[in-house]
Image 1 (cartoon, rainbow, N blue to C red):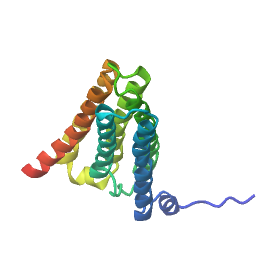
Image 2 (image 1 turned 60 degrees about the vertical axis):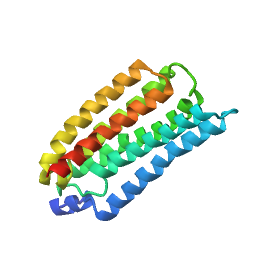
Image 3 (image 1 turned 180 degrees about the vertical axis):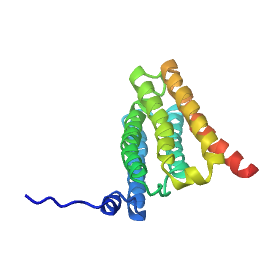
Length: 206
């Protein structure tokens, strides 16, 4: 039996993250983020008497979804990884939990809107929503470590990674505390916005 050897250059080509691949993964993230809006709409349609508080919770839930959008696309999306096998593998596999977390975030939105008037968010909803936000923050930074931008702009990405890790930890603590849906949504929105504020401050000072 004859064995055909695969050259190292052919292996690298098979794992190359091209511009087309990056674009398609970005589109996948956008499609999955649409689930957060769908989740809010589903939650509102299942409510028989939609009042100001329910609508406010729904709006905040949508903004949390946008927070996941800017977290990914401001720091990692549409950027090529370095041209190594290890970076390509890490880039590809890091997107699996990231897309799963964003899809789960959309599922949590339904329950969050349905329980808008509760004094405490149901445990499953609070944990799911806070855990998905923490995952988005943490895994986006894992994707960022594979990028050329990570090596070219260390002054931005190193403090950004530390801030995102801290925000992810606080997100989990917020889920454990289980405040009412509106404070929970607002708290997660603030946590998603903190790394963005750090990035803007770094860019401005530079």
